[in-house]
Amino acid sequence: MSKKYDVVVIGAGPAGYIAAIRAAQHGFKVACIDEWQNRDGKYAFGGTCLNAGCIPSKAMLESSELYHRANHEFKKHGIVTGEVSLDVGAMQKRRAGIVRQLTGGIGGLFKANKVDGLVGHGKLLAGKKVEFTPVDGDPEILDATHVVLASGSAPIELPFAQFDQETILDSWDALELEAVPKRLGVIGAGVIGLELGSVWARLGSEVIILEALEDFLAMADRDVAATAMKDFKKQGLDIRLGAKVSETSVKDGVVSVSYEDKSGSQTVDFDKLIVAVGRRPYTEKLLADDSGIRKDERGFIVVDDVCRTEVKGVYAIGDCVRGPMLAHKGSEEGVMVADLIAGESAEVNYEIVPSVIYTAPEVAWVGMTEAEVKASGRAYKTGSFPFAASGRAKAMEQTTGMVKVISAEDDDELLGVHIVGPMAGELISEAVLALEFAASTEDIQRTIHAHPSLAEAVHEAALAVDKRALNYINR
Ligand code: FAD
Ligand code: NAD
Image 1 (cartoon, rainbow, N blue to C red):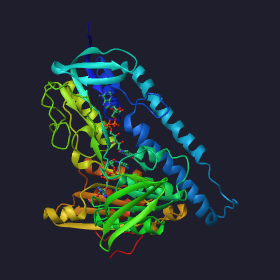
Image 2 (image 1 turned 45 degrees about the vertical axis):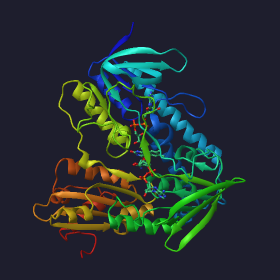
Image 3 (image 1 turned 90 degrees about the horizontal axis):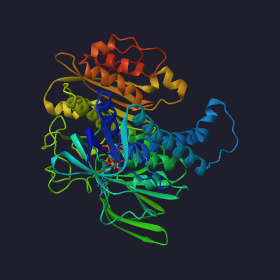
C-alpha cells in the first residue's frame, strides 16, 4: 500500500527544504526527499547551498580574508604578530564543521515541523505519484496531492576540460583542497571564479582567471564593475578578459591551458584548474517518461510565473527552473508555492532579487543598472558616495568602493542601488526593502541612519542624487 502525503518535495536544498517547512506550517502532511551524499560518505540535507556552495565558500572567504588581513593590515592597526602561518587542515576542519552543524540543523527543523525527511532518490511518476528509493532499501510509492520539484543544478563541464577531481576541478573540489596550489587557473570570471579565486589568492596561490567575454562582470553596473576590477587587480588577481580557452592537457599533475585572445594563441601551466563557467539544471532520473513535465531546450523545467508546471498540482522551484540561480530566489519560490498550495495568494517579485559577490570588496546590487535604465528611455539621475569619505569605513581600514543610487527624474522613484565596498552584501538589504516598498530617493534621504555606520554611505548616495550630499563635495 502506498503512503499518502499532502505534499511531497523532491530536493532538500534551500528551495526544497524551505517549501517543505512552510507547507508543514500550513498543517499539511509533508515528505521531503533528498539523496545528497558528501565526500565523507555521509548523507546530508541542505543541497548545494549548505554542502558545497554558499556556506562553505563563505567560511573559506572569511578565513582567507582574516589571514590576508593579519599579514597585510594588522601592522597598520599597531598589532604586532610576528610571522603569521597557515594551517589549511584546521581551516578546512572549521568549514566542514560549519557545514555539518547547519545541515544537521535541517534535520532538526524537519522534526520540529513534523516533515518526514527521507534520504534517497525521488522520481515523479504519472498521476502525482512519487517513487522513493531509500539509500539502503527498495523503492516505495508515495501518493501525493501536490508535488514540488526542487532538484537544483550542477556545474557545467567543458568538453575540453573535463573534471577529474585531481587537477581539473569543479567548485566543490576547489572548496575542499587540502593544500594551497602554487599556480591556480580559473576558467570563468563569474561569481564562483571571483570568490574562489580570491580565497586561494589570499592564501598564497598565483591566480590567473580566464574570461571569454570582453566585459568584466557583464551583469553588473559598469561603474561598480570597473571599481571592483581595479581593486582585484591590485590584490594580484590576474583577470584576462576576451580569453577563449580551446584546449587543456594534463601531464604529471600540471595542466596546460591553451587560449586565444587579442594578442593571439597563449598557453599557461597550472597546478590546479577550476572550471567555473556556470551551472545547468539537474534533473537526472527525476521524471518518468510519462510524468507530463516539460523541459525547455536548456533543460530547465518549464513553469509559469508562480512556478506551476504543466501538470496540475506539480510545482518546480529553485535552480531547476528559469531565473537567477540564487539560494534566496529558490527559498522565496518555496514559500510561494507552499502558500499557493494552502490556497493563499502569493508571488515572488523577480524584479527585486539582490545579487551579492562575496569578494573583498564585496559587490552587491538590486534593481536596474544605469545601462538598463538608459536603454528603457526613462530620464534618470544618479548619485554616488565613496567609502573613502565614510568615518566607519575609515575606522575599519576598508575605504575601497562606493554606493551608487539611480532614480527616476520625473517622480524620484528608486530604480537601482549598486554597491562595491565593505559589507555590501549586508548594506544592500536596505535598498531591497526600499524597492519592495516602492520608495522614492527622498524617502531614503529622510530616513535616519545610525552614525557612524556604513549604511550612511547609502544615505549620502541618495542625497547625492539631488546634489545634497552632506559629507562629500557634490559634483
Ligand atoms: P540545490 O541546493 O542544488 O539542492 C537540490 C537538492 O536536490 C540536492 O541536495 C540534490 O541532491 C537533491 N536532488 C536532486 N535530484 C534529486 C532526486 N531525484 N531525488 C532526491 N534528491 C534529489 N547562492 C546564493 O544565493 N548565495 C551564495 O553565496 C552562493 N554561493 C554559491 C557558491 C558556490 C560555490 C556554488 C556552487 C553555488 C552558490 N550559490 C549561491 C548558488 C546556490 O547554491 C544555489 O542557487 C542553490 O543551492 C539552489 O538551491 P536549490 O534548492 O534549487 O538546489
Ligand atoms: P557565472 O554565470 O556567474 O559565471 C560564469 C562565467 O564564465 C561568465 O563570466 C562567462 O562569461 C564565463 N564563461 C563561460 N564559458 C566560458 C569559457 N568557455 N571560457 C571562459 N569563460 C567562460 O557562473 P558561475 O560563477 O559558475 O556560478 C554559477 C551560479 O552559481 C551562478 O548563477 C551564480 O548566481 C551562483 N553563485 C552565486 C554566488 C553568490 O550569490 N555569491 C556565488 C557562487 C555562485
